[in-house]
Image (spheres, rainbow, N blue to C red):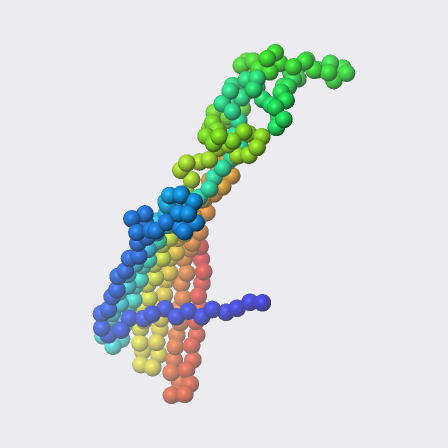
Length: 239
């Protein structure tokens, strides 16, 4: 099924009014999670700053009114980013310590020694010579970090990003103007939204999502008689 949500933007009046607020949450004020405290783990690094304000009043008394509001959000939260990465000597072609989960050596064969019967000879010492390593692959592997978690590569993820975090940045700005013509009110509204989400994604490729856009609305409200009101509204949504 579906649903319909109706929202009405606040309008200015013949008196000036305004408001301001800020909500803060950070490591100074945060308490530790119950389960983390029981496990002896420290508080996770997280913060939230949400601020904004409004102002409204007359442009021409009894006829033209304005209303403006703005809000910003900055939120940072801890995130988990773990991968299985090669040992440092593997990136140099040295697989002398390459073993399976049972501790048996894994042999690296030289493809250039393949015979007609598809037999191949192993690299001496299980080490690929430096001049046999492709320059592109060598450059790519130079960006891969070394393991920093004491877990064998065949048992699980041996690297954890110590700076992993997720961040949300949001902005919202709305402006509205109302003009009164006798028993008819003309209203125009413009809203700008900007949302940037930065989080962990695939290895070496953070997941950054950018969204938002522009929204406008124009409405004409007419009092036909005391018991009958007519409203015509249009709301385009360009991005």
